[in-house]
Length: 242
Image (cartoon, rainbow, N blue to C red; front, side):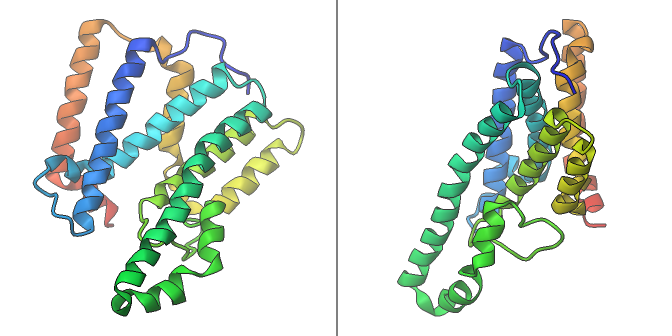
């Protein structure tokens, strides 16, 4: 795959809008998890969009990462360094804090938590799985203590790996490496990969699809009403539970 030399899809104004979308999606996920964890937050209606917000993140990720690869990262080294720097600067503190916070809770109130912490949380496989993003691969039961949202990062990183191999690997073994990465990632992660690839497709082809300003506004309104209507109907969660 060659880098796209055409006009980038993400303009300065679109970048500002995507930052707003990213903030609202992050807020929805935060409020949703607060409510799930017993911190009463259901009065903040944005929390009911938390599941859909994760889908938004996947599309945005494909869009932003792909545009960066198409326009700024000329080889696998620059792509890999950029991804490592961004991912592990978050992952290492997240792992440390997960164990530190749970450990502090055990020290303060050991009776209900100590057995679970020492028998389950402190297994080496939990750290290994988190460091190599295997928590969601093939039903592996490795989890960070009190850090359920980490699952989405495991999905994201494998999308980066698969895309990076398809983009920058060369030679006759290129698609073998892509296939091996897909096999390690597992079916659950691959099931949502088309959402990420939709963002990647927009990064390459979106500039050809931009309609007039009035048409953009109309399309935006339609998608907002569809997004809210789908959430209120419960259809999305019904499909998820099948």
